[in-house]
Structure formats: C-alpha cells, structure tokens
Image 1 (tube, one colour):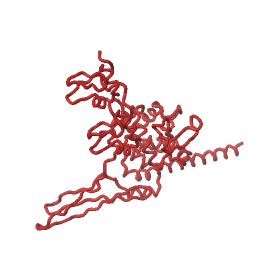
Image 2 (cartoon, one colour):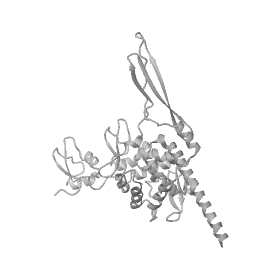
Image 3 (cartoon, rainbow, N blue to C red):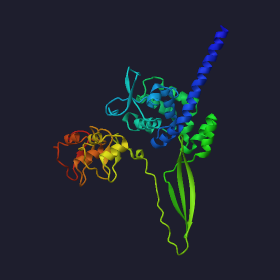
Length: 371
C-alpha cells in the first residue's frame, strides 16, 4: 500500500511539474503581447495571460494548436464571423460549435482585446481599477465570458501562482527583465539586456547651437521573438556660409485602435478624418463597408465628411439623453449620430415625417414621444 501511495504521489508531482513547466513556457512566449495589449486597450496583462493559460491549458489545446485561438472566442453570428473568414468547429458547451481561427497568436491577442473593448456587456470592466485583477476576474464571470461557475477563482489562482499581477505595473521594455526575475531563464536575461522601449517617433530633431543640429534616430530591428530599438545620434555642424541641410522628420502613424471611442449611448465609434471612406475605415477596423453603412444608416458608397461620427455597431432605439435643443445647421441625421439613436425613432418621438428637418431652437425628444 505504501509503495502504491509513493508511486501515486510521485506521478502526481511529475504531472504538476510538467503542467507548471508548460505554463511558464506559455507566459514567457506571450507576456510581451499581453503587456502591449494592456497599454493599448487597458485590459490588465495578468488577466489576459491567465485567460490564455486557462483556455489553452498552457498552450496545448486543440483550438490553440490548430486555430491560434487562445481565448475560446466563438462565432456566435454571421456578423461576428462572416462565411469568408476562417473558422474551426470544436465541442464545447455543445457539439460542433463554431470558433474563430487566426493567422497567428498575436492576431488572437488583438481580437481578445477588441472583443472586450467593443462589446457593451463588458463596459463595466473598464470602470474598474486596471491593477485590481480580482475585480476584473469576477467582472468577466459576471459579464458572462465563461459558463464555468469557478472561472473567476481559476483566473485568480493562476495569477497568484505565477505572480502575473507584476506584469500590470510595467512597460513593454521591462517585460524580459521581469520574466528573468520571475523565472530565471537565461534567454530572458539576454533579451532584457538588448531590448528597450519602442517609441512612436522614429526621429527627433533638437537645436544645440545656432550652427549645430543633433538628429536622434531610433532604428527598429526585428527578430522572430521581439522588436529592438537602437538609438543613433548624428551631429551636423555648418559654417556661416553653409546652408542648413534639409531634414525629413518621419513619424510612425498612430495606432488606429487608439482612435476608437465609446459613445455615451454605449456604442464604439471613430471620428472620420479627411479623405477616409467606408472602404478605408472597413479595412482599418476589420468591418465590411456594408456593415458600416448599415450601422450609420447611410447608403453604401456615401461620401464621409471630416469629423463625421462612424459607429461600429447598431444605434440604439433611444438617445443618450432625454431632449436636445436644435442649433442652426442641425438636421435629423446629424442629431441621430450625435446621440446614437436610430433616425426612424427620432422622427417617431417628435411626430415628424421622414425628410422633415428641425428648426433652430426646437426641442427634440430623444427617448420618448413628444408630450
């Protein structure tokens, strides 16, 4: 009996050790993605990593291996997963459920961030302290991310077991140093020595003297694991007879996801920039032009004006406030966009016919019919 218990205990220990080894390998491979997404979308890196660990079993689930799906995100409708996009079928809560498929792991991490940031039922999460991983774990369960009643506790357990909350307090350039401190891997030590913060400006020009210009360049290098940056400084000195050389300032384009805002009526949107179309916005934000036209109640091919609100989901039956006093130049469509209300409801609430326009100073009802 004692021999049996000894071997059983040994087998259990080996199994636990193997799982912990897989989990740490997973964290080391994906911590940078989680921290990058945290700074873009304000989802705690500890939560993202814990979800990835739990959903993939340390990176070895069928969805992770065959579809790069690390967060169990399903195709619940044709809008969420159009027929032309890749998918995979897998038994979960029911047999043969449809799940999203990705080209690579980083695409899965980005979709997870957008999944939380752009859906109204996760809105409450973004009012929580970003460093309160327990509140986020319970908030995810409450919002219905998973059906497992112990889902929140499982996330918290993994965060505390592997000290994942430490990734909630760092920047991208500190990730490998933190990995080395936590798990003592020599490869992380090497990467920590060679990595530095990737900044948005690739060149910065400063004046030193009337006859000197210093150009600081940031050169981005890549390998298969991480981006590195190398700073180079060049000083150009001119004599009184020389013409100052022409210097081109190059900057990286701002991440388009940072433009996404949340309307008071709980709809994700962006403000159109000059020259943008439904096509260019659709390509930028993974929406079809027909979807954007439908959400914004305009015809496919309509021109977009600079400053125009473009919604990424359907407008609501009621506005974000009770009434609005029309200003000069307002029309019913611009009011419907301003308050995130369907234009048909706007006409109905104000006893107006389609095509009628408000007068300056008119009180426009946004939530119920005119009394």
